[in-house]
Length: 322
Image 1: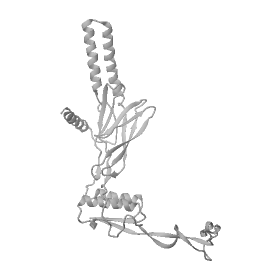
Image 2: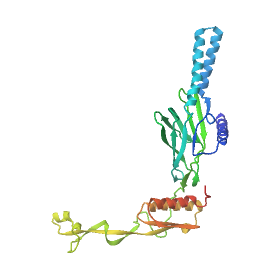
Image 3: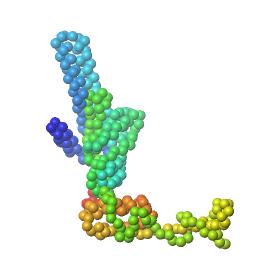
Image 4: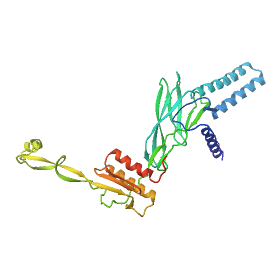
């Protein structure tokens, strides 16, 4: 029960903090953005210092007074150091890499230190994600990579960014919530299954031989006058097997289409996932492939840029522009 109420209170505080400022690509932490509060250990520390102070008052013992004052002074000094460990820090959102639904997208941030300052034991994380720890000691800036799991296809935001620190003694926690304008592209989750009408199976090559060429070794043939001396099989000749020439062939790319109409029994998301699976499969084979979707098509092609173009079209199908 207490954990549930704690989560609700934390969510309300986060919404309130984020509602005070608009999302930004870069910002610097000031006193308007930094919150600070004792940790559980800090509350017990403060309670112990107050108990010692009461004992000193009760017994009129100067040594007990001194101990309590030292503890309280240490607590006050920790407030300043914990706050200073965030103040002046500049956070800049750099980039986001695409991923498949269910995988972790990578986001890159740049941390820039304030003038003549060091920052230690910083923790950064998206909401409900594993935090990443980093320091800025004798470094003016540092790149940090954070990860968040994509839950749906298309453009999506990882949520609020939490930056916090317990430095130096763990008695206090200083934190801030930031809303960046980073967004990642999530491709559909690939679902294996089905066959292409062209009959390209999992074990077949996606190319056909086109006769003599210069790419792939195809075997040996009897050497005939006029053949290039560079193709002579010298190793076989030295072994007494006669004069032979190496035969090469080129492979001509097939052109295959991934069509929306291939699997009419599937719903929209299942079709996109099936098409995504085949796009990834064909991208690893020496074939040219294109994509036909309702409202447009992508001509056959190959390479990383073509692969991203096809997957992007699948990810954004039926989605509004960001």
